[in-house]
Length: 456
Image 1 (cartoon, one colour):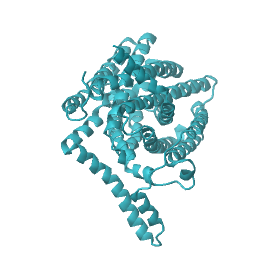
Image 2 (cartoon, one colour):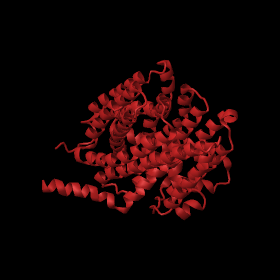
Image 3 (cartoon, one colour):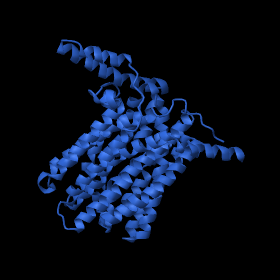
Image 4 (tube, helix red, strand yellow):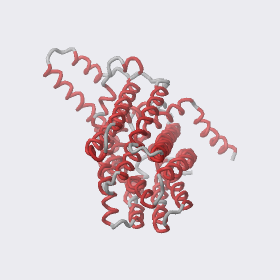
C-alpha cells in the first residue's frame, strides 16, 4: 500500500518538472490551428448557407496531416537561414509556420464567402499545410525533451501534450466562438473576419513563449553533411540529383527500419490499427458543431459547454488517463479507452431525440471529452513508444499521419452520411459507435506481440 502511494506520488510529481510545462505549450501551439480550420471555418461556412455535405467534404483539407511525413525529413535536416542557427532547428520551423498561418488569417479578413468561397477554402488548405508542417517539428521537439530511457516519463509527456493540445483547441475555441458571437450581437456583418484578427494576436503571444523553450542541437549526421556539400557544387543538375537522393533516402530509411523492427505482418497490422482507431470519433467531431447549431444552440452556448466546460473535464481526466497508462499499461489503456470513446457517442443520439436540452448537452460533452482524453493520451503514448529515436520526426510523423488519414479522408463523408440518412442524427451517432470495433479486434491480436507490460 505504501509502495503504491509512493509510486502514485512519483507519477504526479513528474508534472511539476519544467520540461512538462514546455511540452504543454507545444501542445497548445499544435492544437490552436484546429480551432481555425475546424470550428471557425465550419461554422463560418454553415452560417453562410453551405450544406452539411459541402462542409464535410471541405474537411478534406485536413488530409494534409496524413501526408506530412513526406516532407518531414526536411524538418529534420533543412536549416532555415539565420533563424535555425539563432533559435534552433525545431523552433525555427515552428515559428516560420506560425507566421504563415497569421498571414492566412489576415487574408481571410479581406474576403467575403459569398464571392470568394473557393479562395477561402484554399486558404484553409494552406493553414492546414502550415499547421501539419509545424506539428512535425513540435512532435520532435516534444519527444526530444525526454531522455530515450525514460519510457514511463514518455507517457507523462504524452499526457502533457494532450493537455496542451486540448487547451489550445478548447480554450482557443471558447475565445473564438464567444468573440464572434459578441461581434455578431453588435451587428457586424463581417464578425468572423474581425475575430480572425484577434486570433493573430494569440498566435503572436504563443510564439513569444515558444522562444523560451531550450532546444538541443541536432547532430551533424552524414545526410546533413551530404546536403551541405551538395550546396557547394557548381552544377545545378548535380545539386538536384543529390537532393532527390537525399530526400528519398531520409524517407525510405525510417520506413525500412519500422518494418524491419516489427516484421512485415505485424507492422501492417499496427498501421491498420492506427488508421482505424479514431474513425468514429472523427465522424462525430467533423459534424458536432453543425449538429449543435441545428439543435438550436448559439455560438456562445457551444463555446461555454463544448469548449470551456469540456476543457476542464478534459484536463482533469487527461491527467488520470496518463496515470492509467503508466499504472495498467499502454495496450490495456488504449483498448478500454476505445470502448469508452465509442459508447459515449450514443449520448449525442439521446440529445437529438430529446431536442435542445442543456443538461443532456453538458453530460454528453463532458463524458465525450473524458473518453477522448483517455483515448488520446493512450494513443499518443502508443505511437511514441514505437518510434525509433534515430528517426524521431519522420517515424512519428508517419504513424501520426496514418491515424489522421483515417480521420480526415473517411470522416469527410460524414456530412453526406447525415444527408443520406435524411438528417437522422440519432442513427448517425449509433453508426459512429460501431466504427471502433475493427480496430479493437486488431489490438487484441497485437497485445501479446508488441510491448511486454506489467499486468499486475
